[in-house]
Amino acid sequence: MNTSISSGISHAEISVRARDLWYARGCPTGLDDEIWLEAEHQLQLERVKRGTPPQRSSSAKGVDIDDEALNERLDDFGDPGSRSVTSVDRPT
Image 1 (cartoon, rainbow, N blue to C red):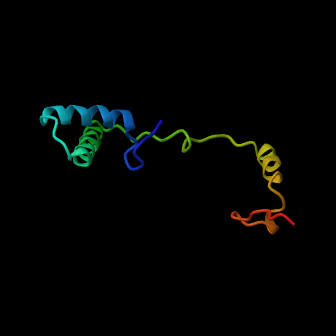
Image 2: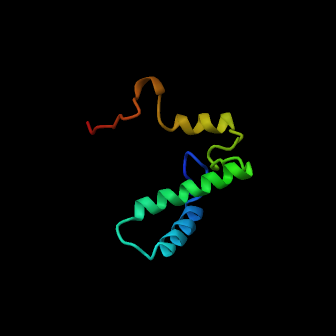
């Protein structure tokens, strides 16, 4: 699910609100960004008023990591001391 990083509001929620605002304003052209930001702002204010905490993305949720499995996967990338994150094996 795509979410706004700062608010935890989903892309779908903002999209629905932005479409409603766009229709309410007579379907103007060239105001897409302004309307999108207004929709996000309105949803943020509503959450604050309701006291709804921001949603966390699934990657931010507490996930148990199997250290042994992680180390096995990291071993596939070779010795960490001899490689940088941008290293490329060049043909010899």
